[in-house]
Length: 117
Image (cartoon, rainbow, N blue to C red):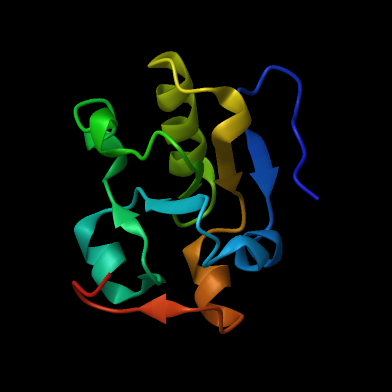
């Protein structure tokens, strides 16, 4: 069940919780890792916006969906959530997948490789 820590402008999710939401029309996965990490394996259909580009590309985030940010271990995705909140995105729509992409891939959840979405 998504949970909020005091002072954080986002909800925390496990990869299993995120996997239950995968494919829902009102959910978008945002991968904020480096290009080499993304190409090595990422959540299927994830939007790729490296964390360093989040502020410049904030308008590329869907404005009508829950935003599930993912990186390798939950640190950069947490930072991306904080950036999105600072840019005025409703904090009820922001989620950080704390286990990260390696755990997603390891558990066999829907994954793509290379430049495929």
